[in-house]
Length: 459
Image 1 (tube, rainbow, N blue to C red):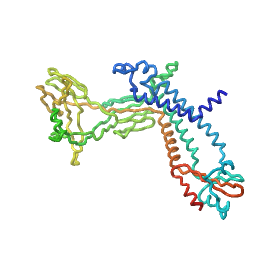
Image 2: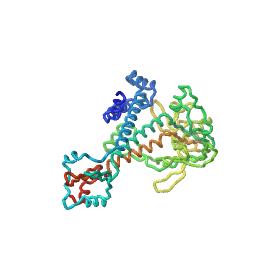
Image 3: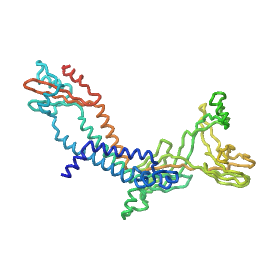
Image 4: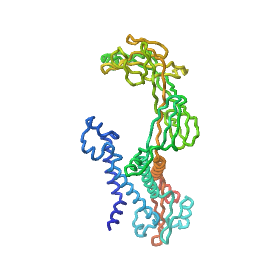
């Protein structure tokens, strides 16, 4: 009795709505509370409801026990639903009881001049197929039955949930910083995935290194190409900015032409775990793929050799540094070099150069544009941009749940689209007390009942 109640409850649409309602609350909480943040940082930032956040794991709600439980419950609910409906579909009869049919107001009387055989010929010519028949009823159909389409996208939802769990348990990603002529070894195996951490907790060995899955990669070239853009000089004075906003004065274009990145390009040599050597390249929006590895162009790093008076120092872009004898801190922007596509369609080679800023009293001030090989005086100090070194930053991700999620998404999308826009028909011919009647039922926005009646010459 308890099992029957449990099974009946799980196969109910009402149960699905309750579960989805509870999951919606989790989605709302996941929007309100920052996700992926550690509790200490949340507390330092002035976060509230600390006890509740800690007990319900609201900073990682989508991998919390509560959300996982609701997801598994939804998956079980969907599984029971599709199994129940599968049994019903296999035993499904298209025959409607004669009494039920005679009570329908949509029954269309067949003219006496049109025989049963003639009506059946018209249906056959319209590409309808006989599905089921008995003495008093004939059922013809056309199009994929909508209940099977519903079953397909429910199956797709279960596959998607399974894919999400595989992703949550096994997916991991990493970054590779490639400096020129320095080979890096990396593996697609990660002992610190959620699944491996769980296996460690229960005492199973997961292995720390997998040399058989290790790749080796060496940078050949990294370059950036630019578009020439137009920069504007905005005045620092609030009154001057107000004047521009009110239209009393105009914004003046900068004397220096602006540069906007057009492309980041990386070429490299990759050695696979099998020992195969591949020379390849990648760009933004053009990832490199081979077997289970995908490399994405993520960014770059630069180190600059700078001589201040007679002392040489090494600095990194966007990292503040000090210059002896000068107040405040200093900041180097990106070293721009390579090809520039100008507004007139021509290209030119750009001399390596970067902008130097001074940070003092919380304000950042532009000091000079330093060009490699040219000495520049800044705040009474002689600065020489000697050289720079550049690295390409690539990222990779291992996610075994993606193929399953992709198939599931396709099933759900195709099922919903065909269910919504398809053209499913059922035509039933009834023999009620020696007289012929017909009914037409449709599903889908593209189904046209009048068109069927017109073909049968009954409209």
